[in-house]
Image 1 (tube, rainbow, N blue to C red):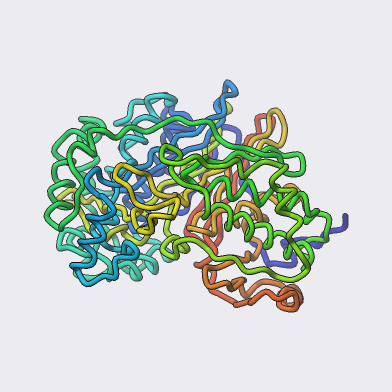
Image 2 (image 1 turned 45 degrees about the horizontal axis):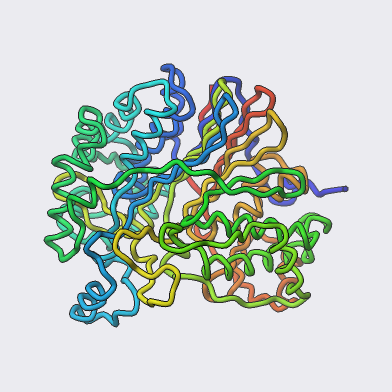
Length: 535
């Protein structure tokens, strides 16, 4: 097939990075270098993933932190393919009736958990997830992986441009004095180039390095978290923290045009991505020319159907069975409903549409490939920082429904529907990529667009991330970037898509790390501040 050069058509300015010993792709240069430092000190991809993610807690604190959750998908050097879910649940005391009554008393309508409500705070899963990752797969001790983050928090770091803009947007959600004292510089968000120090996080990470994750789940940091939440009317308890454990699970997978794609099982939205891949394959979306209206329409419609099913069925499988939405047979049935005209589906909880996340992808010289994703859900999570810890507590619980008939209805100890989905792709026996695209409901849409560009149209890793994206929104609009081909946009509108042009920050940010016959390669999204570290 004759394809236009994406470099010429879409003005790409970066090449895919290649190396022999290590690739670390993140959304912030210091985090990428932290991962490379750990690799040079004898760590492997798992150690580097934790080090880079911990550093992102410091240098990109509105997006991630130990007050949130973490997930991993990996292929080890000896061929094991697996997944880690370190996802916190609702408090044991957070019953539906109790929370609804509290919200009504506070003047809320009681139909949903507000984005910044104290009841949106769920058990933080990150610290135990980091420790478990290093203990099970790493070459180094857990405390060694925290050293770069401790140094940047204590000594300071210059704030980068995209992050400064996002920090400014999140400034207004900082809800208590501890949050403002921790994350503001002279009373306001830092500007690009300002040197920011977070001594509270430095002390917390020092304690984690010395005591391990027990400092949060069974120690004094946990006590500060619980005291803060309960003082504001929440139900999180010390027992909730002590009972928390990450889980290793089997990934879910499908094949897409000869490539095996792995995602996280429920309660993560990985099944949505896999169902969309299957429907698009059944429709023959890739048979059309590069960035054509026909193919794009079919990709979009595939995702709409997958979202419809995912929002109906994906939930915590410990509370309700989830059907096999990723089966080829089911995709064939769903594909029959796609027509030449754009359909409309009702999306899920709008709180999750543009949620904030960091993704780290790592490949090392041993053959390990890791996709590692971490989030507070929205800017600075709940906006509440626990005491003097510097820990911003996540607001993932705002994804719960308060409708008893909804699959994701709030229940004590239940884990919420989770947007975070790192991914793996197996192109061949010794050819694996860890990839993902951050940002709420952008994530499965980005997975399909990026991987299709690589698999179906032969684009390089960097070109696939550089391409302009589309994003089906909760409003029913199909958002596109201004760089999208005007002819394509016009043709999509003729098919009934309600097309709007949006700014690049709405379209997520992707990372890729690949190992191919011993050669490592990586790419990072131009919509973020990141770089690919290598050696």
